Image 1 (cartoon, rainbow, N blue to C red):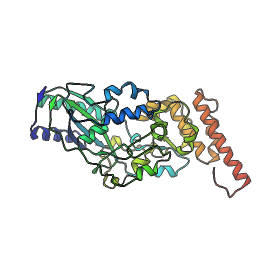
Image 2: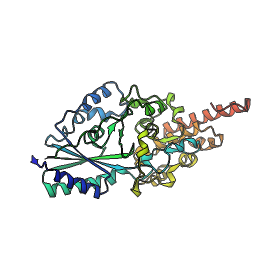
Image 3: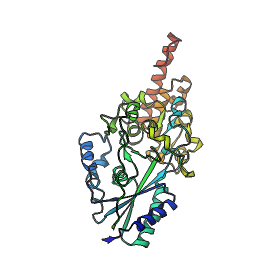
Image 4: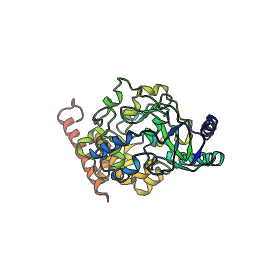
Length: 362
């Protein structure tokens, strides 16, 4: 173990991190209490992780930041701002277009952050000694409680990180090190009596403040869940084809948020509000081409087109029916079922309008 406790060391690391393009940098000690472990155990025991079996398989390594690397003594926690330049919820009003989560409208943040983490880790090791390892959110490291411990923000009632400086929009990464680095003061909870994130959720996915049932979360359902989405949640999907930003977007702390300075994280024009008819027609090759360097590519074409077809069914636009009908013969059974559901819902709308032109969609 290597010891380095000086304020100058931390200042140099922070300065270098900001120079590399990180927007936030904090330090946490890894021998501190870790209440997040108990919350994780309860979350998994209640089955709220849904089909994310990997959470259960890696639970032991998630119980503490040092569980994966017992020699680690400190964490350098980094944040990259991905604040949007437009209202994240505006696309929900455009029924014939798909709504894509802000974080996925630009390039895949994993690649950008990991490269910078490696450069920072190399700087720390060369300048101050010790061993280092880097982590982005693909590793079994509970990054949000670690970021809270390092003073970057706090986990709000929606369980996501909230920053007084960047609102809801921080990508996180960490460098664990054998260096002994003094911690920053942990961030306090500033949610107060606010319930905006809880009340806006289309599926009531929060059993209580600070608790999430992923099985009802539209982000989980559109991204992590394979196979057909349970019918009880399909109407609530609206036109969301990848993720859901509702609980993030309504947070009052976003009044302090800033537009990301990273050009790679800015929204591609093709993903701000893409036409559902075009998305429904994607084959595997076109899907890969459209979402090259995008985090969307990891869910695969079939799961994505499934989401698009649910959105077509929710659109209330009979003119979109041919795009759904074209998928009735799709090679993927889940896509075929979603196409059938979309057509049946649109047909009900046509029937209602034919019998009562004043009636709304149902």
